[in-house]
Length: 160
Image (cartoon, rainbow, N blue to C red; front, side, top):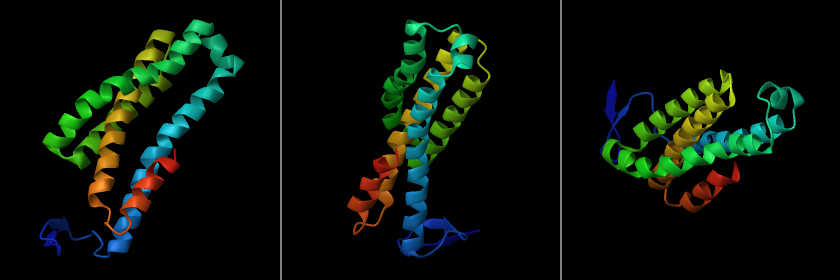
């Protein structure tokens, strides 16, 4: 069921009317998006020192570097499409589909049987993270109340 908000937009009836509650929910969503990027970097850093990981993939210095850096390859291509996608379809769908692509990358990375599959999964993960990260920051900047906007957007990257 939809209801008209004070700003004239139609919102689902379950969306809270309080600006403070909505701001809190927006911050939680942006913090989760930001935390997942930082967690991924920390997780791979921890994996690189585990003998079971390096022995399973038979890693040397070059393949370890490729595994680590491949997320940035996807992160390079993600912004090329993120702006156009977010402008055409909206910020929330861009965040949703970027997160869905990130989850696909996580599933592929989890199921990786060799270095090539792991690298491709990291590229997919980086692409999705870049799309949702770009759309998430812009969405927060556009929707956060103006009196708290600088504080809210400043916290976005603090949770990385």
